[in-house]
Length: 129
Image 1 (tube, rainbow, N blue to C red):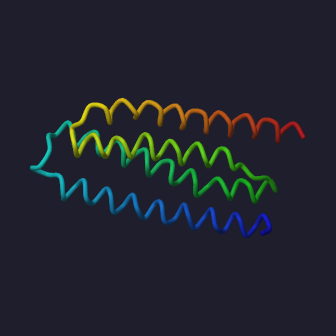
Image 2: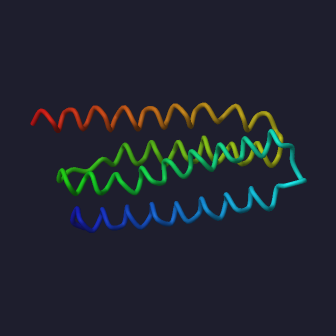
């Protein structure tokens, strides 16, 4: 599979991921009202916000790659892992109230940070060549 085909698949994955954020956000806004605390709803909304932000990043990443003729697979992997660990466990914690779920969330944050720093390093290297 050539690079452009891989980028198109990455773009479609990002689009589906963003569509999922709308579904999850709507569930949080309409399905959780009156069922969980306001603090739990705020936690859920934080998960949605980071999910959407990194969904957009996953959408833009292949476009940067096309412009530069490069791929950034590890950046996308860290963003995806961060979405699962950060947003996913924010969702689970908000819905269940199980504190152990909240203990996983920082690992997602670290994954996001690694992804962003990795992208920054790779772009700096690209600017020097």
